[in-house]
Length: 137
Image (cartoon, rainbow, N blue to C red):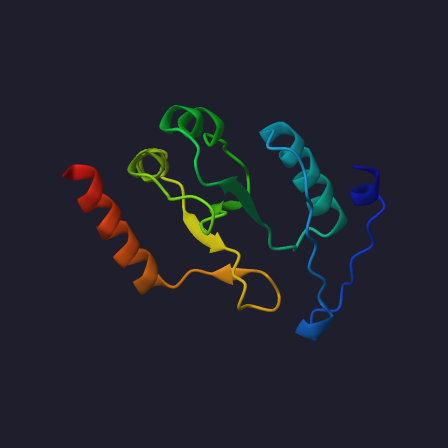
């Protein structure tokens, strides 16, 4: 919190390349995140904020329904990680749909130099159709 309170953001609106991006790694506690967002907004009232919650794939439906029911004052997304290590289940998808959360899918791959890979829509579609077929048979 001290780092955010002492944050000095550029007011240069003309040059988009000089507008800073800030990544804050914090707990999943909604109150903690909201306090940080309030401090960031006080430091720069015109800042655009998005929150990305990361969730390792392999969680149960019940735990996701409990842990992913977070309401924030900012635009928020949920990103499933570790898709290269474990399969995404229908229960995990159902929990996110029921909570009306916007989801992203990330996976680490050996072929990508920077280590992060944003899953392609057609790949996810094929995978989800395959999983639904497997789990309904």
